[in-house]
Amino acid sequence: MDKRVRVRFAPSPTGGLHLGGMRTVLYNCLFAKKYDGDFVLRIEDTDQSRYVAGAEEYIFNCLKWAGLEPTESSVHGGNYGPYRQSERKGLYRKYAEQLVKDGHAYYAFDTPGDLEKMRHDFKTEQNPSPQYDGSIRMKMRNSVSLSADETKKLLDENVRYVIRIKMPEHETVSFTDIIRGEVSFDTSTIDDKVLLKADGMPTYHLAVVVDDHLMKISHAFRGEEWLPSAPIHVLLWKYLFGLNKMPQWAHLPLILGPNGKLSKRDGAKYGFPVFAMNWSDPKTNELTEGFKEKGFLPEAFINLLALLGWNDGTEQEIFTKEELIGKFSIERVHSGGAKFDYEKAKWFNHEWIKKSSVDSLQSTVMSLLLEKGITAVDDSILSKVIRLVKDRCTLLTDFYDQSYFFFISPEKGDVDAVKPKWNEAKQLFFAEVIRNYELNNDWKAITLESSFKEIAAVNQIKPGEVLLPLRIMLVGGKFGPGVFDIAEILGKEETLGRIKKALTVF
RNA sequence: GGCCCGUUCGUCUAAGGGCUAGGACACCACCCUUUCACGGUGGUGAUACGAGUUCGAAUCUCGUACGGGCUACCA
Image 1 (cartoon, rainbow, N blue to C red):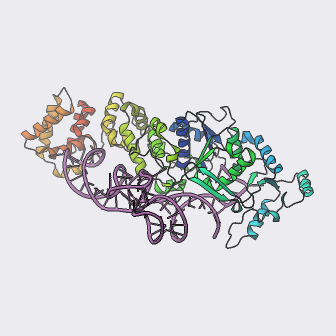
Image 2: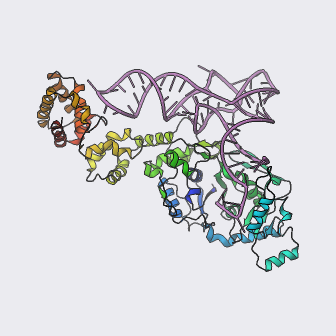
Image 3: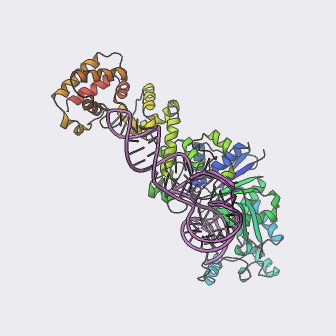
């Protein structure tokens, strides 16, 4: 099928690549893949003040991690490129001029100072933010209020100008949003937005329409914050290319933080990631932690993001990417905003860790341990460890806490948990355990446990009284998987070594 | 202020005029477990409010309230 969807990005992660942005990309990707269509990524680098060095590469890295690379393009590739807006600069002017010629737009010569003055002069209690609209247009310096001669003179003198859309007086603009149904606006409440800036760059409003046309976009998904400017885009489509060619719009619900639209600050404040991957702002050196580094699997990340505002109508919650592609439908996206719940996000990750095979986790866990300074980890040991502890891990980083004692002998265990109840009988008991274990050539958890309990019975000691000390000896604390499973993986030499060492301390 | 969008357990949501409003996260209890978890079973908990349409409304309509978004030569 001929479906082409696109997503646009400002190379400023503060505005572009939090959860909401990622989800927009995800929905684009799922939709495109479902219909075997294309998914186009556009980079908006028009505003230099917002441009952050390295952000573009960062965005692509995030998409790559999540498995959401566009099907058609790298930044320069594809049949409808270039995809970086600054490289398309020359394309837009002629459409803006066309609109002026057709009477749908006009030149405006107002300086920033003029605009500021207007906003100040017309500001009232009832109207705290006056707009450059039909009621004010004739009071400003533009090709509508000025005579043709005056306009021509200013143009000839190369006075800086912008091109603004001329909003019709009193018209109802409506369109059908895939998620919300019919949405309509009265043009008298909308201002004359700038389409082409003084530097010759288009604003989003012009660029989005021209690009979607040139790139033959069939479906356009974006955040709900764009809904108020949708009528401008509909009008531009009507004037420039015809409403019948306009892509179908879907305005995605916002992802909310604890108060309002989810922001980077919310993440820092409440201790959860809002970006896919770590981002350090080169301007401020501020580090924002990502889902990847926090210990999320990309599969879980995609899964939790997809379910934030969408479901397939069944009670299924865990989906592979392939299942999502097969089952996703943009019509089923919920219209209300969704508050991000980090607890639930972690649950998704837990489910995915449980679902993942030991093999697929191996290299990730290996490098995680390495980062923490645990080197020389044997592959076969590690896979046994992962099998034993993976159900206990919510985040990948939990693997360290759940398994470091396999690789590092506990320096000083929780002696206080044992010492008060320690006595001669226990000392003798463990001496016998050592003797028994030294003769054990099988070294399996089951035999270790049965002989341990036999010795306890013979010595008339309750297993419970000596089980905890054994755990402290091997692990160092009151946690971890079954103590005999641990002993098995630790091996004979290490296990006996740890018991002997502990006996000298108790 | 104006315009737009939205509103079902604390949170994410299902139910598209007809069962006792279903599930998941979180929380609580019990079970399992001689550690801590996982797991299992059960429980608390919602249709914002008011009218209208209808035999029948979470569902359709209107109003109100609340929440959110937009209101730049940003996106």
